[in-house]
Image (cartoon, rainbow, N blue to C red):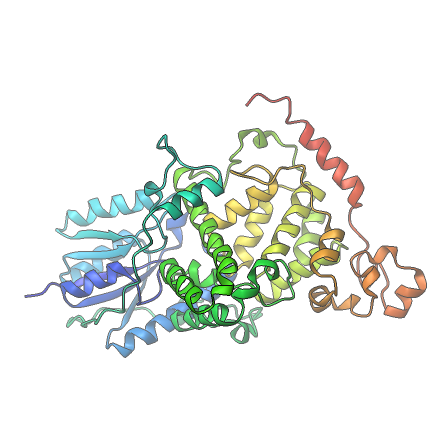
Length: 480
């Protein structure tokens, strides 16, 4: 007689390429379970934008399971308590899941293994969210990598990731399991519905993930090498939210991209560059796993003594896209309107916050955590520390992006800036990224009134750069 197994969905909201789900299905009937436990992640509770994606992903997963005759059981509360209750209600002898790597994950999984074993229930954990397990990639001395390039080279020397698994055939559990409703979790914004229109921009879930991957590889990857830095171009994959919630596995991305090179060999170089960005995601998880304080503490201990400012007015101006620097404001408004921001612009706005405004990278990390659909603890912490100069393999602190030059270089024709900063729609290209330099008559012709319908710069670039370098100089004498 086959045993009933529970598959505990986490950040792997799909049916394809899920080793744990396949193993559970081979054991016998499956209870598909998702637990909403906000306390498990302590201060890193899922952000507002990510809740929208979670709701849509769970709805898509529920529909996919229903096609196989399997209900998705939704339960909220303490993870250990819920698992024990559901196991007891169906007499399950095993809980299957995919591994997580956040700072709290290992301890949680060990405590669950111990508590479930007291009820003769096994916890069976499988890889599924990375190409390579963090312990499998190390330096020659057996220590964690701290620089991306040698890390990625080491990954590429390893055997290719296994081919993705097909969706298993699932058998329903004969015993009904009590479930809550997705609507009762109130994951979607209502008053106001600030996510209005997001359904036209995104299609969360497994089907949407595969459609996005196929679209990118068929039409856009060939332009990825240069086009990935142009925010108005459709040259990036926009797969990060799908990977964050496991609508898509990195193995699926890897093998689909490698296969595409056979049919479009001229795109091989661009495809490899794209895959190296998947490698950067791996690197971020590698760092988070080995250095779990990274989301909260400077990786470079010297930066614990950096003289960060605390100007709330400047922080609010940055958050609202009201800094007076058009490319910065465009990025922050894109984030608010779509739950996403182009990666080049992410670097520009992060540099502006940490170096022009001298505000702590944790302020930006926190804002992105709440506003990004792809808010991923590893990538978010790594990215902010990289730009802020305090991270592993970080951009040097003295590399200070000039927001004017960045706008002129990567949004030369102004399509991106004009889309998100419509107040400057009629301003000539020459002055678009530095409207304060436009003559009075040019501003008047374009309908721009600085300080009224568009802000004057909240800091002067040259002065801010000198202040940042001065603050950085205070760290040079430290022997930490």
